[in-house]
Image 1: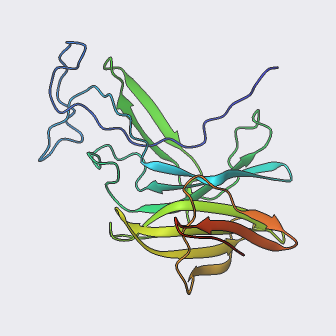
Image 2: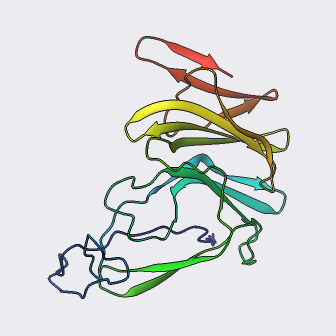
Length: 221
């Protein structure tokens, strides 16, 4: 079977902070992003600065909607050094289900950038149609554990707000398949934490999720 693939989102890269890479080759300074910290024109970064939603894709008519939480601006190679460097916000992109059509259906400006590979070669990057649905500005307010579900032909997005390692609250919003807000960001009246990789389900017109603790198990909708 022939599999088709399409890259719909790319993110920043941390570059070397010493001239010599682990391969023993030395590289020049990456002037464009160096400041208080000096970076060099090679990289070996395993961080992704992004969480794909669960589920991350929804097929709607002739389109695919992709949802994730990520840092912004996505291609700023100077905002690196930690697993999370600036708050993550809810983002999405809408593309044609037919991968041979390269058009992007969601709004959002084109962003260009790139990074130096482990071998020092420049690799171009471009993002098109990436739209952000939240605008958290402080590291104490960052989106994590994003869940999605199709309900009544709209998309429900549910996520937790974290301050690095501490849970703050759970929020949700509802959009249509074109990204128009049906219900703005709303905070749940109670703490509601879901396992990181679990999906939520839709049953009889309701969103169903299961949560539990070491002492007990419970179901909620």
